[in-house]
Image 1 (tube, rainbow, N blue to C red):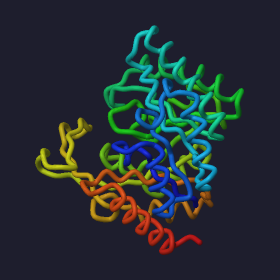
Image 2: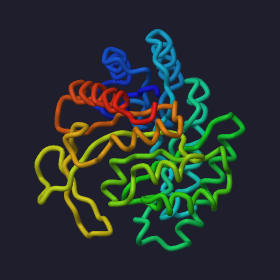
Image 3: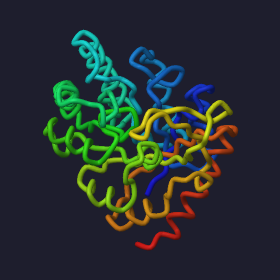
Image 4: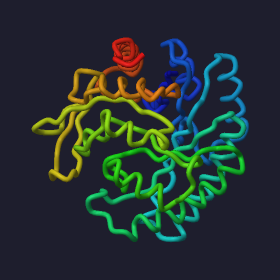
Length: 287
């Protein structure tokens, strides 16, 4: 497996600094968050070319552009068209940066609250994204995410089936998000997603009684309003060992992005999580 840092962890720094930090920490690559000051549809061409030059100098790959555009299921047609145009611009940046995958958000609400028309609208616009991307040999990524249409394996596969572009659109498995949703995220989920699993995110959390302290947040889940604390890997309640055992079992040799948001300095928390991920892989029961 190859390891990428999520540039969003360094969002208070420039993208140039984020790339240098990622290399210093020992990452193979960086997944760039598509929001300023790192990258966006409105970034200048000059800065995009500079990002490519720095990546080449550092020998740092960019496997994914973590887009924030989309949210098609609950947006009006005008807003959806605007999001599609922003996606097209990110495709141009991906071509320059030699990136093969772009994340798009389908939108909400939570899967357990969504109606079929939410999926139908999201699928309509996602198919347009895929049609644009595949001309350039780029894949569209959907992140299994709480507060979205694709919170679970079942809801994710439902949307992929409606888009009907196998091989061109796939999923980011994120055990941390799936823990929040309170759905299966270990072996069964990974085996079920074998053909649609394009990328993996890693972070840890745990449920707490009350939010308000640094690193805490509140979320609506099928259990009601719940509170969470973002943690260093293996200090929360997300069981990542069976995740990596299962990834090894299916022969997953692609990218894993670390995006720890625990209340520690960015370099410190990413380094600790990178060390821990390598320990988990070394302990894996499937060589």
